[in-house]
Image 1 (cartoon, rainbow, N blue to C red):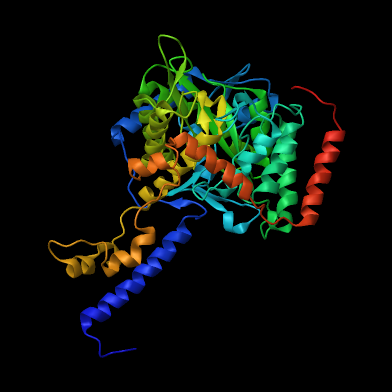
Image 2: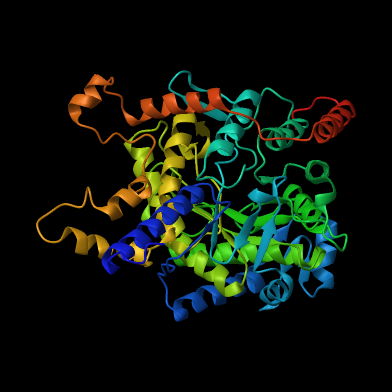
Length: 521
């Protein structure tokens, strides 16, 4: 080392090295397995306000009750735990659900992927982005709107795998309607495991399909599917929707029990369009959401204490003129903020949010409604974000171009949630000393060391001059996104999968399909 250099020069060189290390770390961070937030949560209610919502949720559970339909086993389990069961209506003594959930549900848990580098930590200060879920249609600039096929499902799995801002492969990204309903779950789970090595969601459309999902995950992870004590690792997270208002049906209950017994995670989520499936007020919707989710999480803990559960909230509003769902409006954002705080108080992870919109195409309405959902999602502290990318038409359509646009916005949220760099390089005092008054920072050593990662770079936004934009075809954002998803699919390379595991998965799928006739149920 040249110890004869003046101190300012040595300091500048050292800071330059630090800046380059920070730049390399930032580039690596583009593919982090999940986000660990470094900014505070945004709160909209005081302690007193949150306590009112909790008290009202307990009143719903104790005085109104929750129906558990066509599941005698669930009713027996709840009765044995101390609930009052009349027919299919279950009433819970005040505090019963909260005490059961807090006694055994984990505050955080790891969901394991077949690639250990892709494992995600759900809960605490962590955020996991997953694609949209459940659309029967797709939309693209090339074909417009049509029913989704298995090829589309596989395309979106590949796109999610290649998106650095998305941490999860998701579940029913689209419904492949070219396959029989009773068999398509096998192709969907296999596609997730074949074309991605990120964690995934299991099927919930029947208990036996949940069982198939668990078995396929076990095949994919092999010996790594088990803890040292022989306990099955949490390899799947799955969506259990309450049939709001205040009903759980046998399909959801059956899947919940399968996953809980297998130590797999369930996201217990009331699906609410406020004004139709809950009161028109924010406080009333929040109280109902908490009550319904608490009831479902309680059953999961009674089935298997310690099984991972996530408090879910999907609360949108409706047009009081037409009855149509609306998205990106202020009231659902307030519900989201409240439910995130309530989940932290309860001590369980929280799911909500995404990039929701009612727009039919990737236009300005889609952009602002999605932004008005995604930003509250991140500020509130949502741990598992379903519907991060692709959502159109109130969830009826999955958009190819919208997926690319939403993934771009999710990348921006990575930077936002990382907070402010207060390291010596982040403070940039040497740059200010070097440049001084009246000059510019473009050529200074600090800028040169940091320019590659200084600011978030959108892959689809155009910031060039109007002359250059016109020379390149005067494309709008949707057209640029159209070109990008095609380029990504053309360049896709599948993650490594042991041929023996692939063969075992294909054999399982074939045997299961051969054991049942095609059916649309």
